[in-house]
Image (cartoon, rainbow, N blue to C red):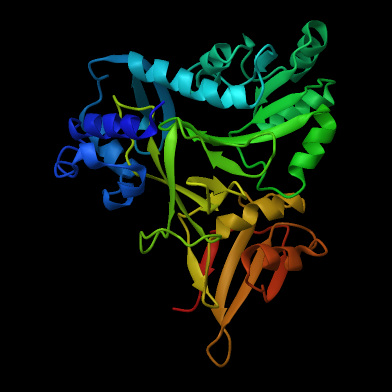
Amino acid sequence: MDRVQRLRAVVAAAQRHPVYAEKLKQVDVDALTPEGLARLPLTTRQDWLAYLQANPKPPQGAALMHLTPSPAMGWMPEYLSAEDVAYQAEALAAQMRRLGVAGKKVLVAFGYHVFAGGWLFHEALQRAGAMVLPHGPGEAERIAQLQQQYGFEVLVSNPSFAMKVAQAGGRFELLMAGGEPFTSVPGYRERLEQAIGGVAVDAYGTSELGVVAGEGLEKDGLWEIPEMAVLEVIDPETLEPTPEGEKGELVVTSLSRTLMPMIRFRTGDLAVVSRRGGRVCLPKGVIGRTDLMVKVKGVKLYPTELAPLLMAFGVDPRGGAQVVVETKEGGTDRLILRIKADSVPPQLGPALQQATGIRIDEIQADPALEGPPLVDKRY
């Protein structure tokens, strides 16, 4: 695959699409490189929602359709052309080959109906030389039985369901996980690997983008899949690239989408960036959302980035945590974390400080905690 030529083909297709026609009309596609993407305008989910609400019917040339739940539309459709489907399968097959699935028996436990999950892996695995069972989600006991009966070596699943399969007796050489926080949760991989008896690697993708980042067997972070996407991490306020090792918003240009192009698509997902050998790596995976941000003690804090650590300490962050910022006497910031729990887990404070670089002044446990995730009392 010629990555530069593919990028140019995708942007040329975008120039013919109503979402992009005006804002990309001055772009010289023949001179475009991945390094030059930062000069192009950003795209948001709201841009696409507005277009899809005005144009609800499938576009000409659509060969495959998926749906994603959307508060604004009920369902947000994603469309792929036949060429997109074929390109995605071959591009992801390259990633599967790097994971050594050729000749392996693979059971896919992501959904195949309505959502994109199973489709993102199935044909790519076949092209990479694997035998595939499109099982779909649920029935952990049956999956464990099938694994034992037929000798499946690879499981494709979200990590929490993989744990249920392991508890039912399923054992796999390799788990290809995705769909929910995994490697960003301290200790999660180690517990899961011990349970399944094999290696567990993470992947990141969305319905709009496909699978765009994944771990190798070295387990050294989520790497940009070069055949699938160009990744950037930007400061969500300044929109400039974040420095090495700092947090920012993940922005993706998908190389597998021409019918519904995704050019510099703002995912809203939070990640730490590392740039190595011309590729982008997310060494801590995806660690939260950028929807909420507060600057406290001179440092940007995204309340959702606390979620993986809270999960590691047994605190469910979904509705069970609240960040409160106050002003101390003298004008400095006071940071309080309230958690929905009977007591504060030992060492939670030091662990959060190490992860965020911010000292939390007080952690309060309240089993009846309610309220928004962020309360800023300084203004």
